[in-house]
Length: 512
Image 1: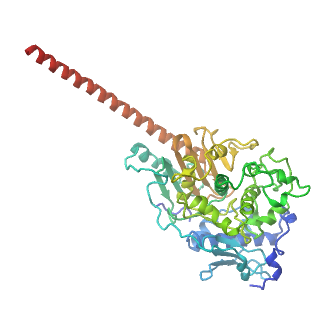
Image 2: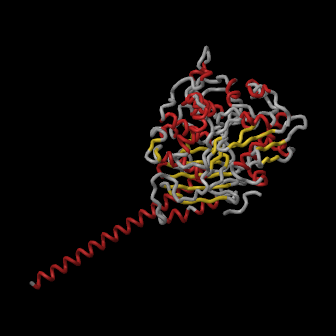
Image 3: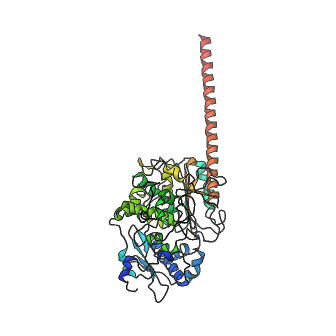
């Protein structure tokens, strides 16, 4: 293991109908200091709840990891908050922020993680939260040397790569080589379904889930792929949401493909990746989507936005039209089948999966998701996602980012244009240094998790990946050369043996 990385009021009946939540028209207005204080308290309550009851961390560890290095605009408000009140018996966390308001409350449920109640809601509002009828159990021990499907492990498989991978993996934890001040918590390298390298910071293990942040978008794409494989949805079917399929609403032209490609054309404010009132305010997904108007024709503009991912997942809920089936679908259709048993998708208080960010997943479970793509969408002989889904997510969408070095397609980033990386490299990327990198041409999955500080250097995932690919390529080349030399030596020995036998026969013939 490595050393440390770094050191209630009565609820009005109207709450049942969401009347205390902010209207959609207010979602992008500049928040007052009072609202920012409430949002910061919600941030603290939710992350303390998830960190305690999903990841199993102590409060001091949560303070050091989850609540340190957060968005810069919340830091002064977070500093003024009281300590979180962790109610172990009720699996509930509350954080006070205003003497005249109820505290912000996050409630845990088995298998569904933590949900944040709206600003102004008291603890009795937790009765409205959805729950699993039959929650699944966690995988208590996850230390197998293989992650893929039908893999035979050989301890001496490419020992050159096994030994040399320790160099870039070790450097990933030094807080300097791949970004000054970066905080790596986990690295897993899988090739041909075998775990070649794995390391964790102190307090993190193979069974410790971390918040995926936006790698959840890639998981959403995988879940939607399963729905397409099951014949439930179509990439190019219009009117993803029922509300858009009426009257003069032009949003009916938005397809599932547009949503996964970040090309719905929907308004999402100046920062499409910040949906703070949903994540930390207790506003619900449907309320956030109600007021989204078109800014561009669907399919013509790339704009990275949490809303687009939320559209896709809410579309799945409406398609299934059965909440019990919706709640279980990500697990039954994908996660359970690939052995990702330590992953939890969290919901808003109305039951929509906040799968643009709010997923907790171990590094190994994340690697399993990458391995599914390397296996052509198959696991255990079953086609879980369509075979052509891999081509879809790893190919450039019609509308591409206009800045940055990476392309985009199907809720994955395309890294193939980066120096030293194979052209087919694609990845799920998330806030604070969450990375799932998939390199099909090398049969390689790389996972790096972290608690990087917002506003400082980002972990250079492209260079880290290039260094790992270089180690593997060099080891493969040396091994191939060694095998060729051994084959040539064996051939020479065969020739020598053949010549010796021929001379022996000649001597016998002369004596006769």
